[in-house]
Amino acid sequence: MIDTHCHLDAAEFDADRDAVWAAARDAGVETLVVPAVDAANFPAVRDCCRRYPGCFPAYGIHPLYVTGAREGDLDFLRHWLAAEKAVAVGEIGLDFFVPDGDPGRQEWFFAEQLKIARELGLPVLLHVRRAVDQILKHLRRIEVPGGIAHAFNGSRQQADEFIRRGFKLGFGGTLTFPGSRRIRQLAATLPLESIVLETDAPDIPPAWLDRGRNSPAQLPRIAAELAALRAVPVAEVAAATSLNARRVLALPGA
Image (tube, rainbow, N blue to C red; front, side, top):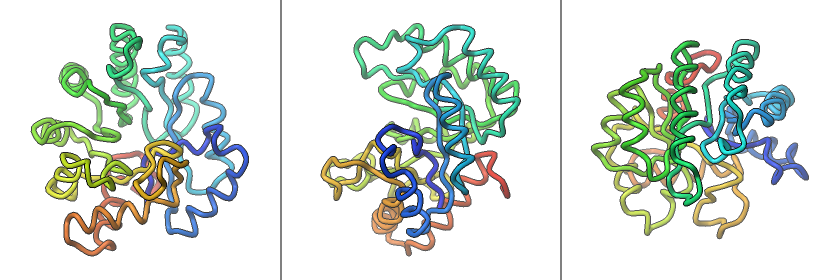
């Protein structure tokens, strides 16, 4: 199985990162995509992926980190992507949920990073929170080779627009909550070839963790929840979502 969004480098795993990675492997999660969040974070992501087999990096500046970013960080990102093997540009996007997130600065950095992805022919990992239409506006203007809309929480119409643009939609712990009716309906009815699985560990824990630290070892149980929603065998979900991830990301063997 492939966890398409896991912050294995995060400080929450400093005490037991080896055990977290080993538990994921034991659970059948053999591939982890580890996205960076700002330029200072790039070396940690690189080193994490070098240390743990099956981990692959993405590099980008997260929308909630652009307030501390400099324009020169974009040149650094471009050079880093050229020098280091990355499977995507990310985590990038827009977050209009946070009140002091500086939407204008977020949009500028997002557009510039889309241009870098287009220039290098790389897919993107999108952070999208209360900004789906604005994200799609930029994607219409700056076309990139697809990617993943991480933690998708839009409408069916918006989902279809992402799919038309070559994107897969990421589903994780949120779909395990009975109250997440819209997300569960989307997960049950979208074409399976448009869905990838993710944990966003250590964040977005599934219902059974009771707000505790999330980990990539939870992915098989999340896959089982998705399979139950779709009334198909979990093996079918695992195979299809892994194939989808390989098709949309620059993963080895894709």
